[in-house]
Every structure is written in C-alpha cells, then in structure tokens.
Image (cartoon, rainbow, N blue to C red; front, top):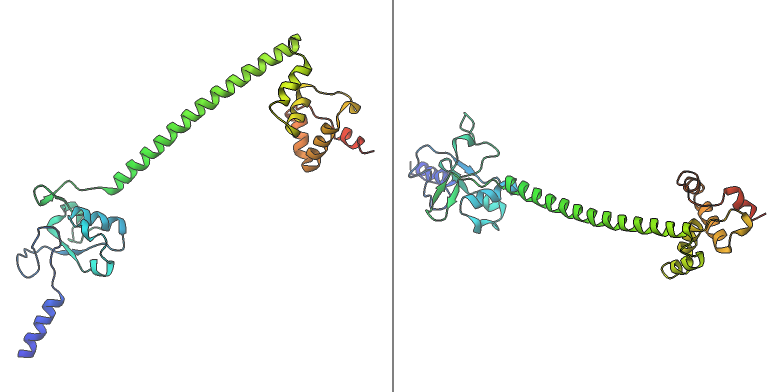
Length: 236
C-alpha cells in the first residue's frame, strides 16, 4: 500500500502544471477550475516571443527552449476565439496582454505580425519617397543639360561658337576616348581619309569588341560612326 502511495506522489509531481502568467497562481492541484494548460510554442520563435511579452515574462526571453517548453499558461488567459470547439488551442493563438498598471490580463493583444507589416510598409514608403525625390532631381538635371545642349547646337548652327572654341571647352572636361567620341558626334567626318588616328583606333576597338552593338549604335541609334567597310579599308 505504501508503495502505491509513493507511486501516486511521483506521478503527481511528474504531471504537475502551474500557470506561468505573471501574478497567476493557478495550478492543477489547487485553484483549478477545469482550465487547460498550454506549453509555450518554442518551435515558433516569433509567436513564442509574443507569448512572453503578453504574459509579462520579458525576462524569460533568454531562457533555453529546453526549459521554456516545460512552462505553461492556463486557458483563462486566452480569448474564446483562440480555441477550437473541441477546446484545443489554435496554432496562432496568443495570450491576453498583461497590464503592467493593474497587474492583470487585458484583452488588448499585441499583434506583432501587424506591427511588422506596418514597419515594413513605412520603410517601403520612405524608400519610395527617396526614389521619387532622386528621380525629380535627376529629371531636373537632365532637363537642364538638354536645354544647355540645345543652346549649344543653336549657337553652333548660327556660327556664334567656333569649332575650335568648343573643342577646347570639351577637352578641359573630358579626355581620351571620351573626348574622341564626343568630337566625332559634334564634328563628323564624311571621308575615310579625314579620320584621325585616335578616331580610327576608337572605332576599330568598338567594332572588334562587338560588331552587333557597333551596328546598332550606327544604324539604329544614329551615332556618327564610320561604316564597317570603312574600318576594314583602313587595314588594306
């Protein structure tokens, strides 16, 4: 008989359940009114943190899962919609929020997913606004450059700006192949023999690198470039 009593006590210790919700003293030995006990969702870290915060157990955030999964929250800290008709707790259920002022449960639950969505939305809106501002600045800069180029073209056509003056102005800003390419667009040559050594070297390099891209630039984009036949003739 004594052996059975000891077994009973050991089983009672093994199945002991106590609610860990702050200021709640309910357990399955005393003050138990038929409420169930629910273990922390340690396999869902985000929801588990929500449980800890809502239960007033922020200081348990660093507790190992092996220990936390042996802690329980009783059913009275969940809303009715947190349960199936069978009484089983839903997977997405979270406890009521513990009120730090009253020291009791509040039905105002923290929805961390909504907070996260709101934060992400705010970040996206801020990023979109920055991109809009950048786009407006670039558009204004492009408009100003186009207006400046149009004025230069008008002055070139009217003879107000000499070719030599413009070349010197360009040379002060760019060098190498960039200067050569810009000069070819502003001062095109119609004869093969009139291409400078730098222009021939640039066009030969461009054509050998990508003949298809070279043809597209010349035929579709209408850049002033010698034909492939002209380039080949330079090496005959």
